Amino acid sequence: MKYLSLLTIVNPEINRQSRPDHLRYISELYNQGKVFMAGPYEDGSGGLVIYECASVQEANELASQDPAVTSGARTVVVHSWSPLNLPVHPV
Image 1: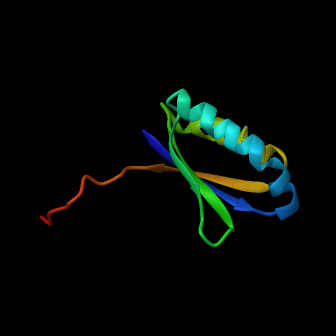
Image 2: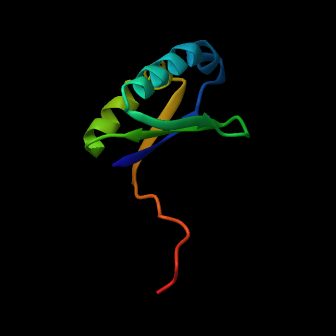
C-alpha cells in the first residue's frame, strides 16, 4: 500500500543542514523498495515522500525517522493513499 508523507519546513536553517542526510535516507529507502517517489514542493515550503509499506505504522515509523524530521527541520503527516486507475469512467 502507498502512504503519502507530507513534510513541512518549520526551520529553514536546520533544513539546509539536514537536507543531505534526508536525501541519503530516502534514497536508501528507495533502493530497499520502501519509497515509491519523492520530491520538493515548487514553492519551497516542504516536500512529499510516497512510501510503499505493509502498514500505516511502518510508514509512520519510516517518516518519523527521516533526518529532516528528527533534526526539527520539518514536521510530518502521513496519510494512506489509494491511487486511482486512470482514466476513470463514471458509473
